[in-house]
Structures are given as structure tokens and as C-alpha cells.
Length: 180
Image (cartoon, rainbow, N blue to C red; front, side):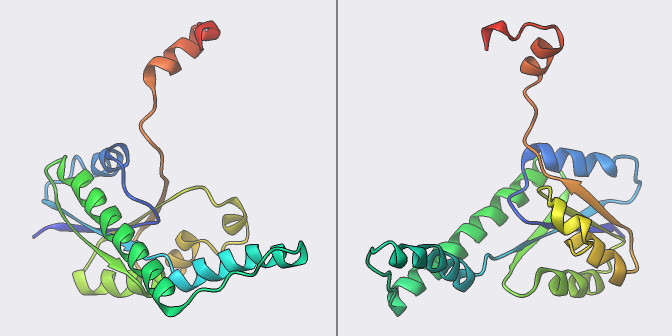
């Protein structure tokens, strides 16, 4: 039997983040199994946002932007490919620490897929790894708050970060910032 953890992320998991997550379970006797869930960016929203930001250019007298179906499909494929690459990088980051890991990309609402995945795999825990979203967190509409309301398993929110530059950190603590 393994201890199952679903990890919902909004961007690829770095080696540093994977190390931190795996370290949380270092003293568990059961083997670990991590399920990485990455949402696909919505291509239509991305195109609409781009067009919306360019719509202001009409007021300024620039030509309008029109996308045909081929352009839209190309954008969709680029987004799907980027999501697959993000998933592969995330799974690889966990594999560096010799843990069992599987993953998937979801085009549906990330929280709805999270809820169903927790049920399907029998997860004992959920970790949500995001960038800081102060406004969403303040109004309690962020993924973590919403997941905690619905799920009956512990939900931990971690902030994604890249590995710190320890040499710079030591220099700044020693007051040796003159060379930077």
C-alpha cells in the first residue's frame, strides 16, 4: 500500500520544489506516490486577452487583429505542447528523488479535476503549489481555500520558488554586496 498525494501546480515543478515536497514525507514508512496535476492554459482566453489588449490600438488608429481558425488551432497546439512539456519536467523533478510519480494535464476546471482525482486514486493528502496570489487569497477564492472547503483530506499550500542562490545569500548577510 502506498501513501498517495495529489500535487496541483500552476507551473512546472522545479527540482527545488520537488525536494521540498518529498522532504515533507521523508519519515513515512509507506512508499509514496505523487500525482502531479497541471492545468492547460485556456487558449481561447489567451487569444481573447491578446485581442482585448490590442483592441485599444484601434482607438489609437492601428489596424485591427484578426485570427482565422488555423491561427487559433496553432495557438491551441502550442499551449497543449507547452503543457505536456511542463508535465514532463515536473514528473522528472520528482523522479530525481526516487519516488513513484504519475501526472496528467487537464483541460477542465483544475479544481473539479482535483476533486475527482483525489477520489479516484484514494489520495490521503493534497498539495497545491502556486505563485503568490495575494488578492485571490485575501478574498478566499484561491485554489487552496476552495479545495479545503470541499475535500475531506488535508490540503497544504506551498509557494513555488526556484532554488536559492546560497552564495549570494551568504554574501548579503556578510555585507559583501559591493561586488554585485
